[in-house]
Amino acid sequence: MPRYQFSISTDDVREVGTIHCDSFAEALTTISEKTAEGATLEIGVDGFPPARYERVFTLRGGLFAWMPSAGKLAA
Image (cartoon, rainbow, N blue to C red; front, side, top):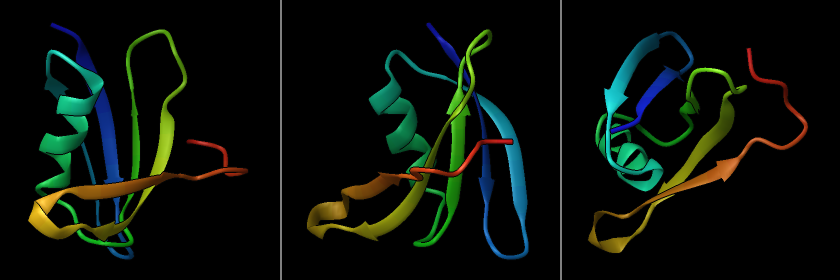
């Protein structure tokens, strides 16, 4: 089971942690349950640079939409 390292940033708070999930999609879903629109997510695995996303909206039925943050470098 992969271990994903992540950080979630909002205007005034940054949370850092790890999550063990079978897939990247499952990790995004689990993390999404604790975030609000406008949050920035950096997520990755050891040995690779993290991907950076911005939460743009929530779809009907509780599905979350993340957009890659193009042109911005991850920390």
